[in-house]
Each structure stands twice: as structure tokens, then as C-alpha cells.
Image (cartoon, rainbow over all chains, first blue to last red; front, side):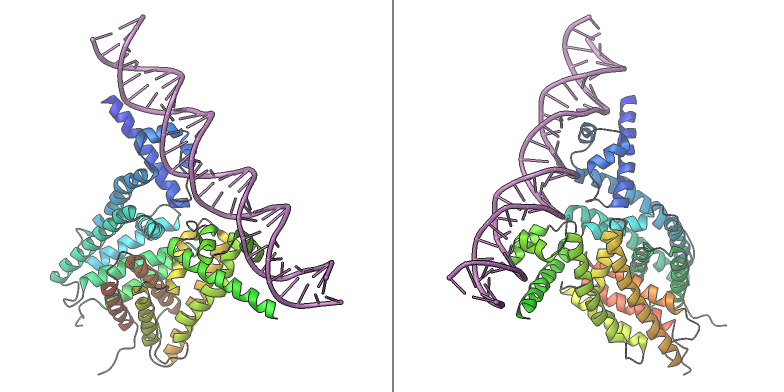
Length: 204
Length: 204
DNA sequence: CGTTTAACCGACCGAGCGGTCGGTCGGTTC
DNA sequence: GAACCGACCGACCGCTCGGTCGGTTAAACG
């Protein structure tokens, strides 16, 4: 038991450090030696715990990325009444994290999807799955919003979910240039405009 | 003169082939030897014409990417009356190109911005500049649209331009998963919704 | 005709990469 | 206390990559 705990702790430490470096420098631009140097560990330790660099990364996606996307991008909109309001708050929070240069897991996803596209199908599948889960959950929230009268009944929920995710991926790409604060402000403002066009008309 | 022409032709051929491979496989995943093999040329020829891989890429951005972004993403919206209609048509055309797996230069930009972010500041600058020119031109089109009565006067043109580019970058990221046709259709549909919220209210 | 030169060739270099493997060492078992 | 094992070490291997350099060739020139 104690042994098992130690093993898990080590593996987790490796994954956390790995993700941090992969996120900052990219997968292909980060060598295993880079990670090991940061960890103060050796090649032997790495290949004792993981089969290959690829398997290591996949374990990171499953153990860290997927869970974090779930807890940060999905759970906050699950039990809210007004899906538009929930989504807006959630994305604004995520962008705020991004502003302070910390890892924002929505973007981690987009980043990696761009890096692996056409280069590693196996890894792409895991990333796409995570993305799809996000999309499906937004659709669910929107559908519930329709019955609750927050969302116009005729809107195409899949389309809206895709548009939301798209704009989020895109704004994060633009934010790498700096000016994060104003980009974030403008983004939320425009998202509100967009959501307005999807809301039932208020009869004053 | 004849010599000069030949030189230019060779350089151009190298740039075109280089961009194609860089686009398909990524910059860091494409070796100079890959490109030279496709061209049927030698290392010597490459380093005769270009100082380094980096300089080679920058020349591609300046000579090909910037010009193509200009002619495909900017010019089509320059002399149109209704900016929303012009932008919609332009982006729909670009997505159609993307659907058939050809190079779509809006995405080329986003792709490379993702790849070089945090890895090569010099190259990033050139890409960001191109992006900024695109943004500025959308802003110009929107401002003109205000005076012409197509755009609500109170809208934040910079914010709208950023939101448009963001959503475009993002949808292209999603399109790498396939389902391009439906993604494109949904995207244009949602963009129309969004634009509706920015148009002057029609008094029936 | 010989000389020069732009354009190109391809063997080679050294650094860095992912991955292997023989070995070490502290703790547990019997 | 001998045998064993999980966790980890680090030298090493094969390979790829960006970049170098001493040629070669064909056309232009005088």
C-alpha cells in the first residue's frame, strides 16, 4: 500500500511537470531530458514508469487535461439556470486565469489539437474526445435553457456550442500576443451581443 | 536579367514547396531535407539562396502568407457596401477552400501562430503583424458600414473584428477533426445570428 | 580559347533526441 | 543474513537535424 502510494505520487509529479513543460514549450519541443532535469530524475526512472514519450503524454491527457476541462469548463455550467449567463461567467473566469499566464485548460486543449493535427492521430483522438465532451455538455445546457425559456427554441444548439468553443479557441490564440485584458473585455462584450441574438425577445 | 529571373524563379519554387510542407507537417516537423527531396535539390542550393531555416520561413511569410492573406481575406471586403455580407461571403469561401483540404491562408496564419507561440519570438512578430493588418481592415470596413447604415453606431468595431477573427481561427481548429461541411454550415449560420445583433433595428 | 562566376551538389559535422540496458541501493521476506 | 524486489541511476546507442564546406558545372565574358 505504502509502496503503491509512493509510486502514484511520483507518477503524478512527473505528469504535472510534464504537462507544464509541454504546455509552455510544446510537445515536440520538449525533450524527456528537459522534464527529467526539472524533476531532478533520470531516464531510467522515466522509462520505469512510462513506456514511451507518447504513452506518457496520453496519460497526462487522461489524468490531468480531461479532468480539468471537466471541472473548469463543464461543471460550472451544469446546474445553472441560465446557460448564457453560466457560459459567460465560466469563460470569463478561464480567460482571467489565462491573463495571469497560468494554465487554462480550454486552451491547453486547443493548443495541443493544433500541435498534433496531422502528426499523431492516436493523441488527436484523445484530444478530440475531450473536446466533444465539452461540446455535448454545452448542447445539453442550451437545450435545458430552451425549456426554461432562456434560449430561443429555434436555435441550433450544436451550431451554437461549436461557435462558442470556436470563438474561445480563437481568442486564446490572439491573446498570446499580449493585450489580454482588453481582448478579454471585448470578447465577453461580443459574446453578450451574440447571446442576445439567441435569446427570446423580451416583450417590454 | 535572365540570371536574375532564374534566381527568382528558383527562390519562389522553394518558398512555395516549403510553405506547402510547413503547412501540412508543421515547421519543426519538416526538415530542410524533406523540402529538398520534394524539390529534387541539394543542401548546397538551399544555403546558397537562404541563410537559415528561420530566414527561409520568414521570407515565406512575407512573400506568400502575407500577400495571400491580403488578397483572400482583406481585398474581398474592401470595396463592398455591406461589411457583414462581405465578411460572411469571404469567410464562407475560405472555409470552402479548407473543406477541400487546400491551403486556406487565414488558417495558415492561426496554425503558425500556435506553433511558434513561445518558441520563436522573431517569427511570431511577423505573424502577429499580418494578423493585425487583417484586424485593422475589418475595423475599417465596419466603420464604413456605420456611416452607410449597415452597422449599429454604438458597436465596438475592434471587439467585433477580434471576435470574427477568433471564431474563424477556432472553427478551423475544430475542422481538423472532420465534419467540415456541417461545421462550416453551422458556423455561417451562427455568424449571421451574431451579425444580426450588431445591425440597426429594421423598422418594419 | 581560357577565365570567372552564379548556381548547385552532396559528403560530412556535431548537437540533441527517444529509447535501452546493466547496474545500484534501501527495504521487505523468509 | 541471504535472497529478492521495486525504484531509480546514467552511460550509451542509433538516428535525425540544421548547418558547413570543398567541390563541379555551365553559361557569360574578354
